[in-house]
Amino acid sequence: MYDFMMVEIKAEPRLDQSTIKLSADLSSHMICDPQRLVSFNVGKNRKTLRAKTSNSRLIQNTIFMNPSLIKTTFLEEGRKYGINFNRNEIYIGPVIGIVALKQNSKKRPYGNQTTFFQEIIAGSKKLGQICFAFYFSDIDWKKKIINGYYHNNSGWHRGKFPLPDVVYPRSKFYVSHKADSRRRLKQAEIKILNPLMVGKWDAYRIFKRNPDILPYYRKPDSLIAFARSK
Image (tube, rainbow, N blue to C red; front, side):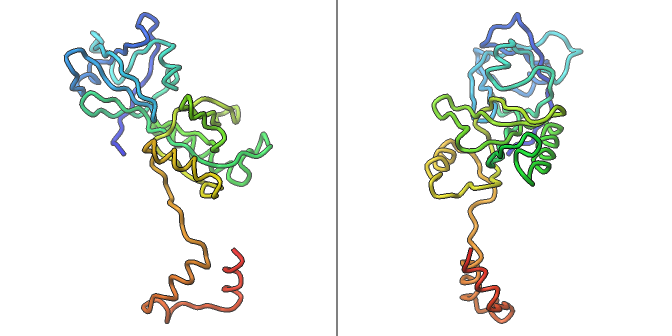
């Protein structure tokens, strides 16, 4: 990924929805075209916007945006985000999606993984990342948005998110009937953590063919029977 610094988003109603204003220190990182057009990226949501530079030298690490533009780029006013520059491109985040099936429980919607997800989301926010949980059925491929879930001090809530930069599979990601959704995620150039791993029985057969490992590999009947059952 990229080496992200932190930036604050502030609402500026006088700006139109196709323009952002950068504090002078941020503007110095940009190499813009003559028309001052930049590519503004939040996850896989990309907008071409016109960039202005703030006249104030006292304001630093700040992007001013029309309130409606803040909403359509899936950001929040007053929150700090990671930011990275690449010539005339701005990357916010990164955006991380945790793939997991939601259960019918308000307190523990992700079962015994609920606390773990809460810690990931809280830690990601401190780093300026956008992190949420979702499952394939939450994706609106036509609009390229995800109706995912996030956690804060008041509990779990549903919100709209862009297609993420990174997907972290935690449950039922590699089931066969979701092959088309996985293919779409890959086509969107979304990085998938933890690629598909072989099962216990397949791992045993691979180890068995390796002459260097075989002398050290114990295979009691109970272990083989257990592996075959998986």
